[in-house]
Image (cartoon, rainbow, N blue to C red):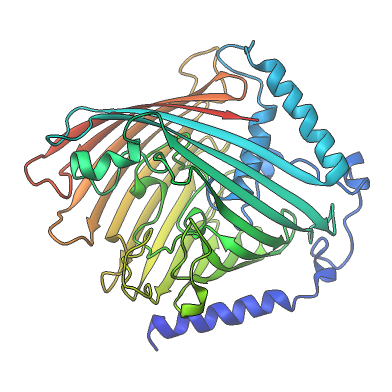
Length: 456
């Protein structure tokens, strides 16, 4: 049978299994409740997640609300920085206190993350901009409603995203128009109209400590499939090839379902089904009957540290859009493909990580027909003795775009991130663009970027 038939059948079968699970048998994987180990747990609250216990239940990188809230909580606690005394420290302290009181009274976890990017290109096509700056702000709230403090906890998540430019072209609008570059130079950094949208709105059951999780509602699948928490446009690389998986015909934020089952701490299987006509500005058109489906198998191969990530193999199918127009990673055509991601820790402390990706789409159904990348990250590199919680990395990316008249395109990204103040990360990055896909007359260009990320 073709994958176009196998994938939807397998996805529906797997998701139906999640719904019929006896949740009582999954309190701690043995059929009994976890004994309270902290004051918070005994009072029905969920204990904060330590870095070493980062659990990737559904989300992939911090474009997904589940991962984003964990990252915000981690950065709130982070106090080491280049300058220990922050001019906005009273604001952060007041926000931390307020968030604690909010959860005590309402069981709502709330986080805000603000990301700003300034970017300059070494050259641009005639009549186009060679620099731009934009801000991307995420407000994420999860309301814990059922089985609070237990692995089978259920809750409602709302994720609002706001993007605006500062009187210029947004960096994400520089790539193709200014360079003819299809991997883009500033993923996520361009204005919305209207400025604020509902990017995610869903119900989720199951969380860290649970063998399973099920998510229903408006979901942004491109923050889940083919991603890793190490590669994100907020603090590391900026191109589509490095941060995402656009050799998958990904729909936009859409109504759908995602389910995951952890066979063990090292093996999991995820399934998803979504409206192929999804649109981040509204709730799509699920009545048209066009769907995107995927199966994603994850395994930790030779993990060297407790917080090692999953390697993943994904097979997907997209029915195409009802009007045949492209949206997000989908070209609007029906097709299928596969995607492979291998994440490998290279040190026992988990600070040195390598990530390799390869994806292939068939029938011209995805933004890239083929995509490959190799990335290496080093946390706490000890470049400067007084700075901790910093990170550096390099990513080599190559794509074969599906756009007619395009050519193979490559780039190399190098970045260094460090906390300037507590709760304020700063990232400097350089990108070498080789053979922009849509400009055969240009073989090389550079992009220089400066980013700030603050959390509240």
